[in-house]
Every structure is written in C-alpha cells, then in structure tokens.
Amino acid sequence: MLIFGSGLIDNPPALIAFLLAVSVALVVGLSFHECCHAWMAKELGDDTAARQGRLTLNPVAHIDPFGALMMFLIGFGYAKPTPVNPYRLSLGPKAGSALVAVAGPVSNFVIATLCAIPLRLGWIDAVGSFEGITDASGEEILGLFIFFILYINVVLGIFNLIPIHPLDGFKVLVGILPGELSRQVQSLAPYGPGILMTLIVVSWIAPPQYNVLGRIFDTVGTAVFRLLL
Image 1: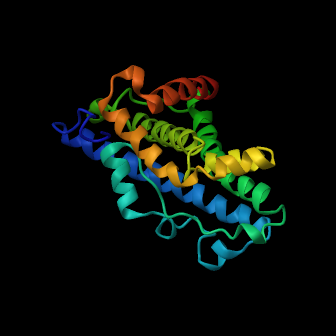
Image 2 (image 1 turned 90 degrees about the horizontal axis):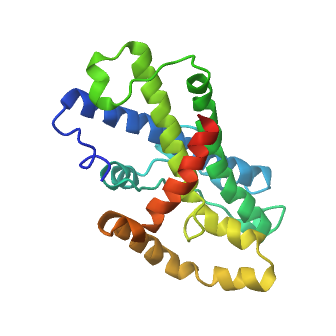
C-alpha cells in the first residue's frame, strides 16, 4: 500500500512531505490527463466534456475524492471519467474514441518528459528519499518533488494504457484492431472491471511471479525511466 507500506508512518516530516508530493503529482497528472481527453474530443467535434466544464486544468473538475484516496492507500485510483459522445467524433466512433483515449496517457508522458529535463541535465539535484527530507536543501526538496511528479505520471501513463476496460488502453486497442476482431474484443468490456480488480488484488497478496501488474510496471517503467533519466 502506498502509505502504509512506505515506511514513513514513524517519520512525521517525511510522511508530510510524501503526502504533499503525492497530492501535487496527482493533481497535476490527473488534471492534465482528463483535460486532454476533453480537448481531443472537442478537436474531433464533440464538445460534451467542454460543455460540462471539463476542458480545464482546474483539479476540482476532474479529481474524484474516493479515487484519489485509493491512490494514497493502495497505489491505484481514478479521476472522474471524461464524458464523450463517440458518435459526434469526426473520425467516427471507433478511431475517434481511440484518439481521445490515447490523449490522456500521452499527456502524462509529456509531463514526465518535461520533469525529466532539469533532472537529466543536472539543473536540479534531488534528495535520495523522503526519509532524508529534514537534512535536505530547498533545491534537493524541489528536485524530489519534480522526480515524484515524473514518477506518478509515468505510472499513470503506463497503467492507463493497459488494454483492459475501463482503462484508456482498451479503447485504443478496440480502435486499432480490424472490424470483427475489434467487435470481439469490445464484447469483453463487461468483464474488464472484474479482471482489473483481480489483477490489483493479486498485486497485493500474490508472490512476485504472479504479480502481472508489477511485472508490467517493472518492465515498461524501467525502460521509460532509462529513456527519460
């Protein structure tokens, strides 16, 4: 679990810094993610989300309190889903929905890339961990926060591209597959939430060799971090 497994419970300054960093990273990552869904939908002709006030970076419009709390407690969470009418998209419901879906994770990787620039070029140093926050300089604390925004956005980007409904990756997969195969995959959508929850629970309790989500994050995440940093 993100908080209770972090080893920070007995270190109040480190815990406060950790919670603040997670809050900032989630606000930035989720707000940009959902806003980019709304922006892409509007660009393709559907202003449903825009009319509902979702074409904004204001986190109040996007953050789901319970979903954010889950991210703190268990490491997985969600924002308010962005409403989209696929039949109003200029590219058609299939391709249009895929493009709207992929805009969210792409925004997370863009944020991660921007955060990586000052760290990779050595413009800012980062303290090694939250446990050392009390002895860190202001620059090192800033660097740690920037790194954490990078980290959370990489996690959000990877997680949302997993091709299981209701994640964005499922809509992308349905959008790029040919007709009959696409329809067959779409028919699996009702089972998606159950499959996803099972994978999340397994990631908490199962041995590492059965932790599918953990292996995805380890493999893809390591590659992304090597590319960025």
